[in-house]
Amino acid sequence: ENCGNLDLSEYYGVIGSTEFDHKSFMEQFLPKFKSVQSLSLRYCSHLKVVHLDNIIKALSTNSQNRDDDKDRDKESGNDDEQIKNEKLKELNLYFCSRLGSRALWKISSRLINLEYLNLARCYQITADKNINGLKLLGSLPLKELAISLDPSIQKTEAIDVYSLLIDEDSFRSLKKLDLSHGCEVLHEIEDLSDLTQIRKIEIIKPIKHSK
Image 1 (cartoon, rainbow, N blue to C red):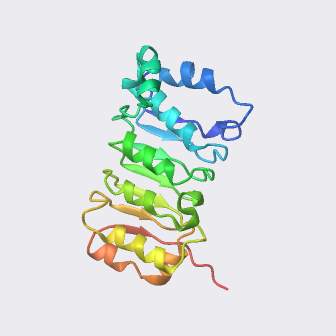
Image 2 (image 1 turned 45 degrees about the vertical axis):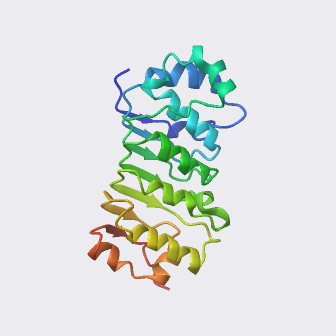
């Protein structure tokens, strides 16, 4: 179907859950949508990286006619890694709380033309002070990015995150960075003005509530 926007957030309570019929959803429903440029999975709290990866693959045009190759891929350990989705430009994963850093590896390797990514409230992505996943996103042509940092992130890791964002060789296309959800530690170490002055990136800061 010729559908540019696909909002699956209304299924937030079932996608990824044990009650969900993944087989029919992945193999019959999603493959109908091969022109999707914007995908929303907001509040899908059961969503894990394997589900996200399967959704991306199901929406990819080059995932067609893969059935004949599945056995060969399993034998070679290929696991469909060559499947890329060149059409998807926007991905909203707001409050997909079970996604870990491995999700960013899948996103960066499959969604090569991604321009908008919302990872706000996805705290597990930087759990255990792991910011390696964020580094992978730096190669994407992202224009807008929203992130949240896990409470385990302290000054040392926050400085590394800031260094990554200020690096002109990463996030080259970034125009807007939303740090309004759970990035207080970043604001504590830097005023972030250099990101605006040097990188010309618009920063969305958290609203400060008066005491």
